[in-house]
Length: 83
Ligand SMILES: [Zn+2]
Image (spheres, rainbow, N blue to C red):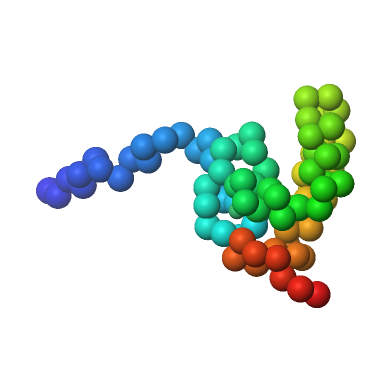
């Protein structure tokens, strides 16, 4: 009987997620994006997120959704795409 070596266990709990900027980085759960992608976001979106964080959970989730959509439409491989 073959036993599989117990070496594939993840080292960390799933407290990170892929950066929505498509740059391949893992970012902490409490952050929306990695540092460089975060600064690609329009200032008003960043301010909105920061303003709502810890104040209005539902509105904050909505703002996160807006940012994710923005990333999907405007960022590829961690860089802004024109048009
Ligand atoms: Zn990123």
